[in-house]
View (cartoon, rainbow, N blue to C red):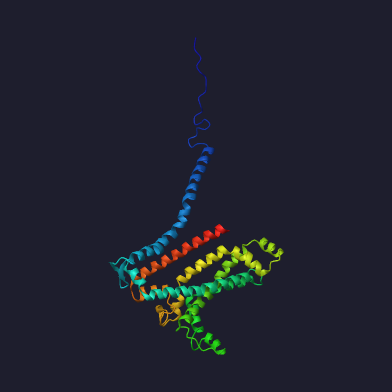
Length: 336
């Protein structure tokens, strides 16, 4: 008896069972594509911030860090501007020489006095201007832009205008003083008039800038504080003393520190105020600042090693100012 063979049909040629396609199904392809995009997004989110900040660090290393380290190395050598590659090791002799130099201490005192004369009136005027601009005024945008006009003006142009104003024989300042019977003042010849004239340039240039900083801080003060003070019967002046000023303590500290750092680096104003004397800061160095003293040693006397020592001394002064700022800031935060 013949046996019956299995009659199951074989698969059709070219057919495929579900899920056995060579390239995979459409859901599998979509899952792979999503996984690939996810990995690419993770790499992008991880490394893109570094790519964005890399140009800054490259420029800082080339134009900030390298000059800082090179001047520190040069400050330990005797090196002249005419032969900057010929260095002779002298250790700390450049530092001891500048500390024994009377002109260095004169420049340090001039920097301190010019900084005080320019910073204190500047910040007080900026506070008053900001308090006025904080009220609703017509064309308030115009006045705020006008406050920035001196800051946007070139130092050279502004200083040359002030040189004409403070001229001894034909200056407008002496002309006004003559109306009141005051003898002409030699603004470029005497110490205190010269320092006052240089400080007036700094005050004119930076008052509006600091006023806008104070204005931004004032506008961030909650109005509820002023309304509560008004309900308690506080006048505008008392509101300013007991609401505005306490709220502006961090901002005031910031502007004081920034202005102090700027005052320690004053250079263009005293250099151009008496162009005949240049880096000397007047005939008797009466308004020569540390910046001018550095320039005189490095580019007039051509002592790059000594100029580098002065630069690092100024850097150390700025570090001390930063430490003082940090200590005061912590105490203010603790008290508040």
